[in-house]
Structures are given as C-alpha cells and as structure tokens.
Image (cartoon, rainbow over all chains, first blue to last red; front, side):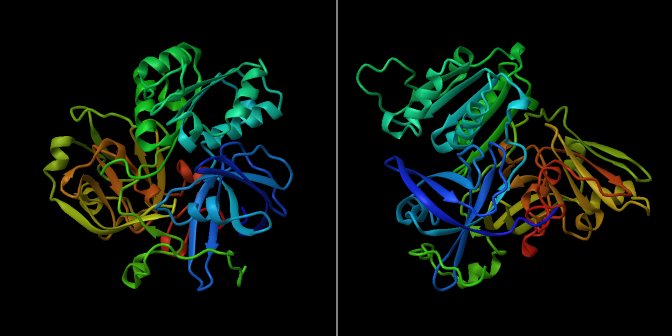
Length: 245
Length: 205
C-alpha cells in the first residue's frame, strides 16, 4: 500500500450552510474517489512554519476530482475558524486521504439504514445519503437528526428534497433548544422512545450509523443495544470535547 | 510540499516550547479526554470479567477481577497520543504491568507477537517487545478514579508509546503468537505499528 501523500487542493466554492457551518468544495488533482463516510486530514501552515492538522469528514459522494467538506466553526478551535471563516474561493489547501474503513457505507452493503446524527455529525451520514441517491439505491433509510434550532440544521433543503423523492428515505428532525411556532416534531434530546418510534425494529436488523458529540453517541448507541439491536451492526463516530470532565 | 503557506492562517494556540517538545509531529495538546470508539460501549459485569493470557505460553492463565487486583500494582504517569491528532499530557493510570502477567504465564521462546482481544469484539496487534520492559499495562484507574466505561473500563490495555488505538479498551485478554496478524484498525487502513514519534498513522506511513 502506497503512502497517502499530501495533495494541494484548490477551493472552488465556499458556501454557508448555517451561521456556524460552511461547505467547502475542493478540486483535488489526482483524487481517486472515496467511500461514503471516510474523512481527510487537512494541514494548515502559517508563515512561520507552524502547522496544525485535523481530520474532517467528506460530505460529498465521489465525483471526479471534486471533494466537499462541511466544517463547523468551533470558537476555541485552531483549524475550523480558518476553514469556516477565512478560507475563500481560489485559496489552496493541503490534504491527504481518504482515511477510515469502518464508518463507511456503500449501496452493496444493504440495509435497512438507521442514521442518527447530532449537529455536524450529519456530515458523513449525508455522504451516505448522497451516495445512495447518486446510485439510485432503494435501500430503505431513516435519518434521525438532532439540531439545536431550525437555523442550525445543515443541508435542510437538500434533505427535504431527498426525502421527497419517495425512494425509501425518511428524515426526522429533532430540535432540542428552540422550535419555530407551529413545530410539531420532536423537541427534546434523542431518547429510547424516539429511537423506537423512528428506528427499525431489532428484528429488521438495520445497519446503524451514529455520529455526533460524544454524549449523544454514547446515549444513542446504548439505547440501541438496550432495545435489542446487535452491537456489531451499530457503528459510531464521535467528536467534540471530552466525554468525561 | 515544502514552502506551502496557508494564506491568512496564524497560530491560535499559545507558543509553548516546553509543551511543543512533548508533542509528536502533527499532534496538539488536548486538556480533555476525548472518546473515540467504533461501536457501542460494552458493559461488562465485574463478576463475569476475566483477563486471559494465552497462546504460545507455558502456562495459560485467567484472572478474575479480584485476582488481578491482588497482583503487584503498577502505574504510568506521562503523555498519551491519539491518531486523531490529540495528545493528553501529564496524565496517569494505575493497574498492573504486562510484565507481571507475562511472568506468570512464561511466554514460549517462539512467541513474537500479541493480539489483544476485547469485550465488544475489538482487537489490536503488537510485537511482544512493545509490551515488555515496563512499556505496557492493564489499567483500571485513571487519575485516581475507576476507569469509566467509555474510556475502556473495567480495564484497558495501556501502551503509551504507541498511538492510543493500540491501548485496547475493554481488554479481555492477550494471545501470544509466532507471527503478526493485523487487528481491527490495522485491517482498515491504520498503520501496523503506530509509533507517534515516527508518525505511523496509516498504511504506508
């Protein structure tokens, strides 16, 4: 296996998704494709030679040399404030990848799919839904997606569109902090009752992908196992600050 | 790609030379203790918990929770490094040295590698040499408290000189082999050895 070498990508577009989240479309010469759910390492270099590296999930389905990342700005972060704040069209960015071979889904892995996201944890799951749509896959899929407020929902219009295609995808939003007038959806943190109402029954043997802040992932994965789902079919990816103070 | 500069990027973290010396290439210091796991956190009842050391050994052994606690204690104080780029500096763990376990089972001379296997199905491979000579522990305390389940409790392997995916959480045992065989992440693109100072992150690094 050859080394994953650093590549110099060019920023083709920066798009605001929410007040704190941007999507960055990159042109990556020689990009060989990726699996939905994989990530890349990004490296920034300051003029004095100082470097900072972080990993970001790929949001896009394979499309030639185009790779899209979606990045949430963390105010006390070092790399995300640059990517979601400073970076603009025409800039260059060093990256290497794709990386990760477990938290991935391709249509031939089947389903049904239970995708559970908290905040920007939706990004690798969106790559899976985009892959599913691009492949014309009819694998039944349910996304349960928790955001603080409606304006924090990433990919809202595209998710509406994908769910409207009537090809076996349902999208259920959860708004934990504030809800718009007339909201009839879930307005609390994801719990076992919600997972039973929205998710598949254990006997249907769904493939579960859970991504979000540590606490959400711990709680959701724990509920799924307690509800009788096979732990070997629940894949998790966690991010964000520490789970234990 | 020498000479490349990210337009407009500046260091945001304080320039701390002492800290920088302790950080392997590509790492940053993280005051917290992030959780990274591929699946749900297994819950293991202490009454059922076992630690096994088996394979190419003269006397395979299995310890209960009470038995392993009764072994001579040993701890680690220092730095740990996760392949996802964070390092936790100046932390501490307590448990038992892997040397103590190996003494009890007497590895056969042909034993060269180890697979650590875990509750929940995780596994990781290491050269036997990386587990001997005061370099590896099975730990159940972190900074004086019982190791939380999401960090590998009841007990995890601790091999702090390698990236943390080698420090298998929820460890159930060590199997000594006369050959190398990739574990979970080692089969999925991550480096077979995982030395942070040589930045052995992925296949081919």
